Image 1 (cartoon, rainbow, N blue to C red):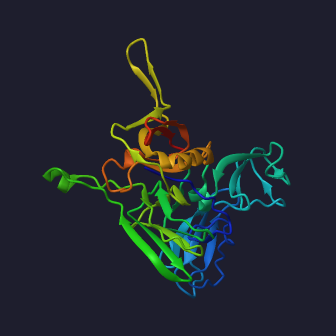
Image 2: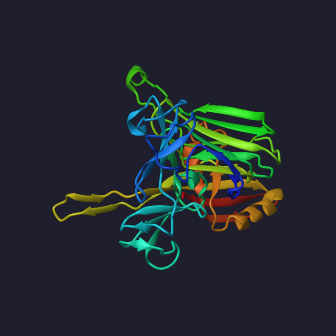
Image 3: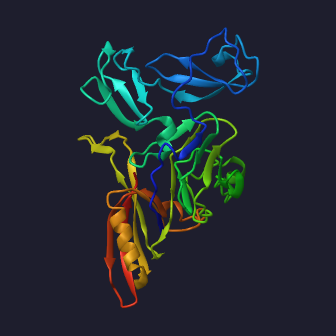
Length: 352
C-alpha cells in the first residue's frame, strides 16, 4: 500500500504544453502563415477554436474547411479584457489564476472578475491547467495528443496519471535534453474469455497508470503524452510526488460508491430515476510494522483535508488494481496499535 502526496504544479514548473490557454490572434485570410503558426476562429465570449498551420505559405485558407492546411488543436476562451464589453452568458478566462468566468449581466464593461456580481466563477480551471487542479474533478481535453512537460525543481520518484481518455500514455524523464527514463503503456485492457468476445468484444481502456520508479533527479523534466489514433484525448490528472509506503493492504478490502442519484418509487410501483454522479470510495485494512508508525502519523497530518493518490497494489495491470486505486482525501485514517511488533491501520478514501 502506497500513497503519493502530490506536489503543487506552479506556472514556472509547466515548461511546455500542447494545450493553448490564451488564444492567438484571429485568423486573417490575407495573412501568410508559416508552418507551426497558430490562429483562432470564433467569437470573443464564446468558444474559440485554435488551429495550427501544417505547412508554410499558408494564405487564403479558412481553417475550419482546409484540413490540408490547418490542424485543429483545441478549444479555449478569450482572456478577460477590462476594456471590452461582454454580453450576458459570455465566458472568459483569467490566464493568471487559470480560472473560467461567466458574465452575469448584459453590457458588462469594466467590471473586475473577482468582485461584485457581474461575473460568476465557474469553479473550473482553464483547459490547459485542468490536469493539475488538485481540488476539482476536471479533465484536460484536446483533439490532438496531449503533451505536458513539468520541471518540478525537486526530486520526485513517483507519478500517477489519472482520468485518461487515450490509447497510449508515455512518460519520459529527461535531464539537460538527455532521456534518462521512458515508458509507454498500451492502455487496452481487453480480455477475451470466449470466441465471441474475441471477435466482437469491446475494447475497454485503462484510465489510470502509476509508476514508483522515476529517477529522482533534481533538475529533471517529466513529460506526459496521452495519444490515440483519432478522436478526443483527455487527461484528468498528473500527480507527481514522493511515494510513501504505508504497509501491506489486507484481503477483504471493500470498493463502494456514494450514489447521488435520486431513486423514487411511485404509488403505482413505477420508478422515477434522476441519474447523478456516483463517487467511488474504498475501505482498506493495512498491516504495518511499528517502525512505520511515525511515517504514517506524518502522512495523516500532511494529507488532512488534501487529496492524494492511494494505491493498494503497485502493479496497475493486476485485476484488483482499479478498485484499490483512488485519488481523493481520506475520510478515516485510524491506527490500531494491535501488537508489540505491528499495528493495523483502517483507511477510508473518497474520490474527488
